[in-house]
Image 1 (cartoon, rainbow, N blue to C red):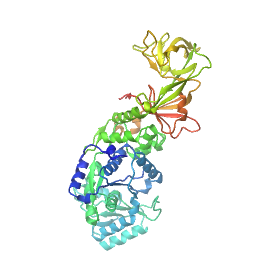
Image 2: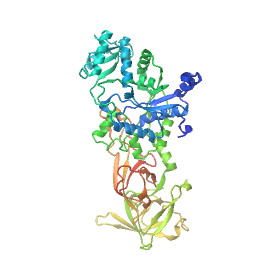
Image 3: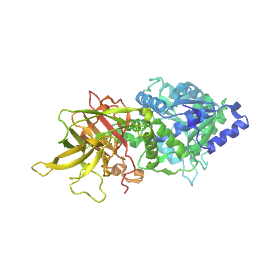
Image 4: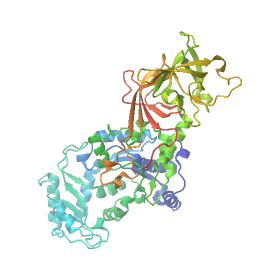
Length: 554
């Protein structure tokens, strides 16, 4: 990926880095990292952080590490790690080094010992509930633990025994000794180690104590020589603790933490807990359900890495949280697919059309452009025969005003083929239309008819040559802009978020479609072949987005 493609407009982070480089800070080095916890699949919010961290490194010829914050093994898995690596690569980025917080467990332990020896950490026997009660409030200072002034030698002994597994889960924690009266609650003697007998996916059962995120993250940054630790605004109040830990330990590097506004996208949720609930309670088919805001879901829906990178660049980097309209993301994918998706014809609700003046056994191979604005993408052959299928909505017995499609006695042009006229309508015993009897004007292939103007153009497929397909019409998963504001976010699920059409027909060329191929089904929308369910010759296409915004807002 080229540097120019990833350069974003000037923002405050780049201004900080430019100043640092001008002042020769960090010896002119720029090193960033993307540090996800492997407790779920990455979502669209992570895409902003990925593009920022990797894009900044590219722009300044620096480095960006992928580091897994794997300090909470109860909720983490190798599956999530593999999905994260796949998503980062799919977005178009390569990490400098792959790291894990667990790589540093021994160093983190020794640093904790150092804090104890310096009188800046102590082992506390208060329960989690008691620690919360002692912490105070935003307007009232906290209260010191009875164990706060435990002798250093006793703290060292207890901490070593915590590591050795002598105590039950939750019996002790190691806390930093800072200031119980600090106006910043994060500085009121935060816990930095807890006892958890949980098997770790990388270190096995070697450890029964695990470091807390705020303690681990800053030291991991320092060990890796990160220069600019970019994180979202919710960590702004944690920055004093980030700096305090590094100041006490006097690590070789002291990275600068810089906060930016996280991505808040309408009609989505990005809480991993709630996304996991959607999956486990089967409100969706999995983390990669095309309605999910996960990168795996967006990929399966047909979104492109380019569209997501473009979206992240358009919304920019700010210090102010704000909501982004879903239409911005949909605009980015429409723009990309309009430019690059091949055209094809698919009939979602087929109506049979028989041409009385066309030979029974004749088949023509009509050349149709793959993209009207890109002749370099070539043409394909679309078979035309005596019986074709059109959309049921493209015929009306009683047409509404300004209707430009097919009516009895009226004419319409078939995309890339002839002008046809409907002569009669065939119905079943219940009065349902089952077939149209039509005729073609043989002199209108590739040219206008003599002496009359035909305004409507509709798509079609040959009944004999078309292929059966299942088409899934995906819409927004939630019916309200901010489902998190609801008493129960599940109540905001859009009951019309998925419509499955099983009797569709697609043109013959789509039989060779490959996983994640993207198409504009003419006059219908943008679709891609489903990479999971298109097996054994079955064709399943997912709608990525409609041709224009058609979502009905409350």
